[in-house]
Length: 274
Image (cartoon, rainbow, N blue to C red; front, side, top):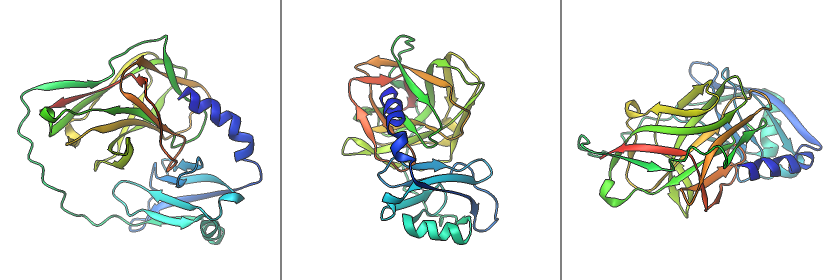
C-alpha cells in the first residue's frame, strides 16, 4: 500500500494534466434518491472515484482514455458501462445518472449446519514497526488479504473480522469491507452481500466487526479488503503488516486492475464458524 502511495504521487502530474473534470450525481431510478458509495471508474485504469453519501461525485477523465470503458456499479443495482467519450457527452447533457435496482433472483442454496467450531484465518500481527496504509484522496482505493479456506472448513459462515490499526492520524475513518472470490490468483467477483460500512475514531489498536448478521457463506479461498469511500483529508492511516502472512492485494481506485505482493500481509483476520 505504501508502494501504492508512492506511485500515485509520482504519477499524479501526468494523470491530472489536461483532464476534463465533471460533477454529477447518481440516483436510484425509482425513488430518485441519491445513492451513496457507488463505484465509478475506468476499467483497468487508475482513474475512478466513489459517490458521496448524497450520491454526488466528481471525476477527472484524461482525454487519452476516451476509447476506454467506464463502469458504474453498486451492490443491489444493475451495473452500467459507457465508453468514456460517450459518458462525457452524457454528463454534458445532464449531470444525473440513474441506476436501476437489480432484479431479485433466488441465490444458490448452500446448506450450512449450525457451526460447532470456530477458526481464525488470516494474519494476526499487531506490529507497529512493519506497516502499510492509505493516504490521499483516491476514493475507491482498496487493499486487503487473500485467505486460504481449507476443504475441511467448507462451507463456512463469517462471524467477524478484526483489523489491526498501527497508526491513525484522522479524527475519524470510514471504510467499506468487501469479500471477493478468487480467479487466477486475484480478486474476481464480489460475494453477494449488503454494504458493510465501518466507522471508527480509533488511533491505534483493533477494529472488530460483527459479521454474523450478514450471513456471508464461504465455499472456497477468498479475499477480504477495506475500501476507502470518504475523503477525510491528507492524513495517514497505517495498518499492521507481517511477513509470510496472507498475500496482500490492492488497487488504486474503483474498477482499476488488481495488483499483489506475496511475502507480507496486512493485520486482518476473519473468524469463521464451521
